[in-house]
Length: 594
Image (tube, helix red, strand yellow):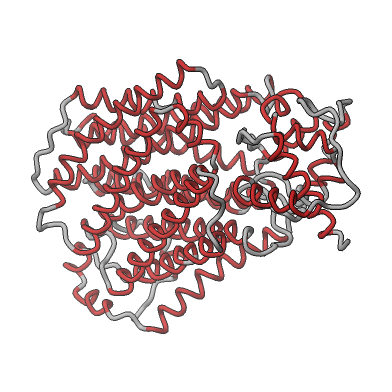
């Protein structure tokens, strides 16, 4: 038997089925790499990792997850769901190839340089190609039947295009106002908001509705409901505005927006939940679809709570909540929803090895979401951290690459209806050889190993907070005591153990999500050595007067420009800040071996 070269086969477009199969393999490949990088990020909280720049791994992970997995799967569902003619399908091959090249460029540039000339160039290429997809898909929708599904998909595509306006604004704002200006952060939030709430959520819903329409179901979705949903997506951006400008009017607009969104989601979920009962949707596809709808319901309820300004502030000041919400949308709504449709259509098989993978993926998603939201709530209630929280979050996250390895092994033997007609022997491939499964797992882990090796060869610039402190901007003359109420802080010769223990409890509760106790940067700089680099007054002013410090203190601004993540104001009192300072002093002595 003649076997096709594996390298050439992954770029084969000989038929609609082959094109779709390869598209799925690439999408899941990027998904696998994204979750592996996510696991590496989680390991920073468990063990000390040399060589790797956390921020660069974070950027690589987020780009592969959103622009690789999420974007590729949504576009695949739209292309192969809406475009019926073989000749028209081939028109998308160059856009697909360009997208893969852009993603590979980001994969091997972000780990080295973070946001730099090469990675930004590939990101821009991806964005320009996405416009090509948008143009062609909108053209197909315009020439076809106007249904609730096609209107939902059209709306999602337009929000995808709208989201990129924030990225185009990053350059001019950064050049004129600087990367520390509120508008700079708002442009980034613009992209994330409309990608998550517009492109991913509505795109997944559109593909779900399209599947049921093709089964012959009538889905009621009047035009006025479409307008209400669109308005809610736009208005909920006010939450990001309140982060930069916490004025009552913005909180009021956001409160109105989340109520409107609740109503809009209720109309859609009511219709779709009724359709899930059909006998034509079975097995793991039904489980995934139900989980996707439950995730969307949870998203709506969580955002509905933001009608209260106090909770709205907490939602973006506690980073654990932010991560949980991002995963709820990307993994819960989009991944589970689109994958359910792909399985139901026969694009992804239901072999035993694949089912095992989906079960592990569901388990990983549920466990990590429970841990994230539970821990976020404990931080909110000032009840500290769960025992072994970071370790158990890491263990739960191990299920993601394991599940993807099983699913990808099953993709090798996907049974397609079109192939089964012309090639009856494909049914023999249902029995998967253990040796083949082993090779697939080894290949997958080998790809990750190559990536991580290449990351380790990159620059170690920024590994420590000492390196970030060396920024030229810190040479600007500034008050070494910072800006705030603390002008003089008395510290003793030794360590006050009671005060340090109290400070450790506060640090564990409010700081360790972004800072480590060593000199390695996580989201923010590591704490090691901070008491020798900074005056006690500066440290306490930074803790208690963070907004003013970030806006006016050159040293704080230099750290913000380095980390690109604004430290939230956690309303820490003067006594609590003094306890944290004492714990930092003790930590520095212990790290120095004194």
